[in-house]
Length: 151
Image (tube, rainbow, N blue to C red; front, side, top):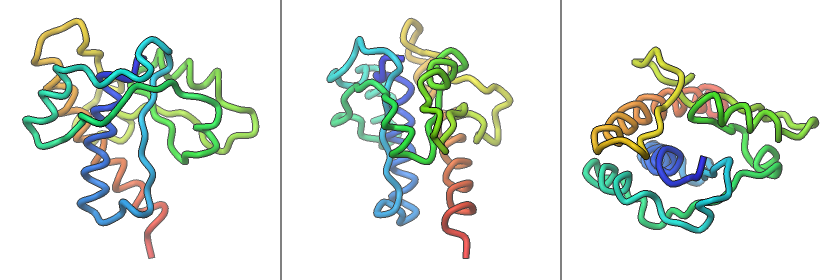
């Protein structure tokens, strides 16, 4: 929604996985919110703290709002929940080859398809988000490897 909790967490985690796979030169990663109320703001301090405890750095990430150009720039546009997915589907340009999907479609160990918003909860919500995001990020990286880098 505002690009200060779930999406920047996913960006930081996925960036690390891509870097570890030696694919940083080939994969562009960015996160954005569907709403404009946190543009330019850093990630939520609780999200940053939870991520830092696992070795992910979110300190340089700043909120931005998704736009139609993202559907031309990226092969994958992923939403954290169905409400945000619906917004992304409404703004998808008609000629876009990129279609928005739920990020947790790539998870292997979670049956849920929505990453819960931890903003109004306690610290454990940010840990749960990290667990879910790490799982889905592994699945997404495997999908990208098979689809775009398989020989």
